Length: 351
Image (cartoon, rainbow, N blue to C red):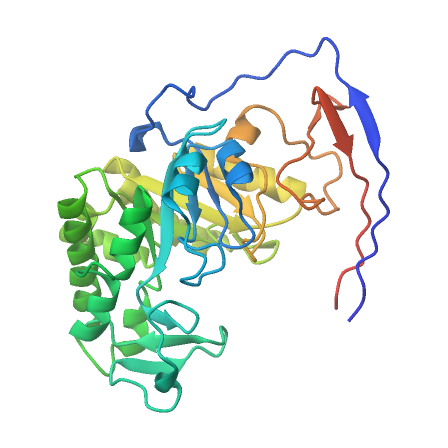
């Protein structure tokens, strides 16, 4: 494994006489609604209150726990602080409903040798993640319906919605269970209805991927929007073919026509590709985010793009440098901040 080598030069720049770009986020006194969402961020690891609250977006998707475990579930005060910082926002929690994760509160050690009937095989691409027969009442009780369920914990913490992953698990089970797709549709509908009965009608429900389900009117009517990965760029920096893009956009356009949020996330690290993805999404009316596939840091948002804060001056090099979210911006050739640090970093990548 080759080491990363960092050459850091700290340069302090005092910006004088530079006008601020247009600020698109709502003021701190405003109440964010789903209609206000113009940009989003998606970070499941290494997030903290300050960075999420300061992110230039009206929506953030994070985990309900700092490390996924019960011991480090977010206190309600932290959730409220993330929602009401420099850029007020909706905050929704990731929740996998098509796979079980062996670090979650519900996991029992005995399942390693004596698994319940609804627990399927381990995902070879994600060790510790197991397919589940999600139509089974026992698994569904883990997800929602009791004070100790996954969804109830998310609601108590103060989140504004849920981001549902592994919706496409029905592909895995269709041969075993012909009704697998219908079972998933009903599962998502039940989750939405239960959550809104506990909260109110504005509670957000965002499935990830499986956009083919959008043609079902029942499903479309209960979701707030949908998250779709790798619309224009596959991890990492690999363009999709025009045919694949057109097929995905055809389904995402259903969301736009029905006033639902089309959240898309592409995995690219080259500045020209970041801008290209944002420009494509702008033409289509989608709400985009471009980041690294590890989802362990914040990167420039769509609002940053609209405000002119993303440059393509060095298209062949990595764009996301440094260790925190958008520490400095190149705007009209000048690093702009009242007082900021410029990190010049050279990376030697692992091969």
